[in-house]
Length: 255
Image (cartoon, rainbow, N blue to C red; front, side, top):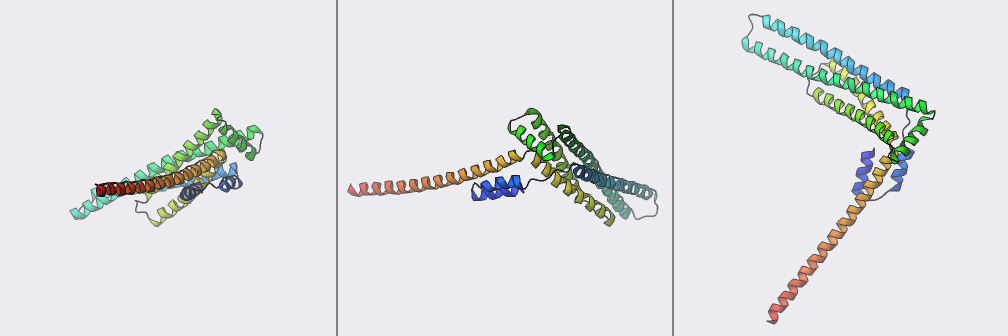
């Protein structure tokens, strides 16, 4: 949402205060229990994929052992099948390793949400009041608030990177219908996590993001002005060059 707003402003070069106001009006609500539950559900889905694919790797390894002990098989066909199974094992092993990393990232994600919830509870304030205070502290460059926000940003960015890596490896696999169905469930949960993580960062630094909108609009407007000035100067330079050429021609004729 925010990226679309920024692109729109940059394209038109218009400073729209209403967009900044809309940022505050449409701020999400932080439901800690739901946030944490979704994160743990996503982690469980990832763990389920790890278990399923690890079993499949084991089955492939058993097939390799049987193939090595087989006799009276066409050598070329045997080599082709052997290499195919090895490729499947390699791809699945790479995928399960990525899933294990993602599982750890999601656990850190849940721990961060728990930390935020604990801080809200300790403050004795409502979530809205606490996030408002955090915004104020961030505006004032409070060290503790900045560290808390940076920690969340690091954790969330890491989860996003791991989820992207999982998807890239998954796209290269030749999945069975069962594997694909399991992977789709995980992907759905990861989409939910991505959305709620974005909401959390928005709540943590709404004012900073609003300032980013205004700054981007100001830069875009300045760029438009600079372009207009450059065009005017180019036109003046062309006119001056034409005038100088005309004067030069007249002087030669006068000679």
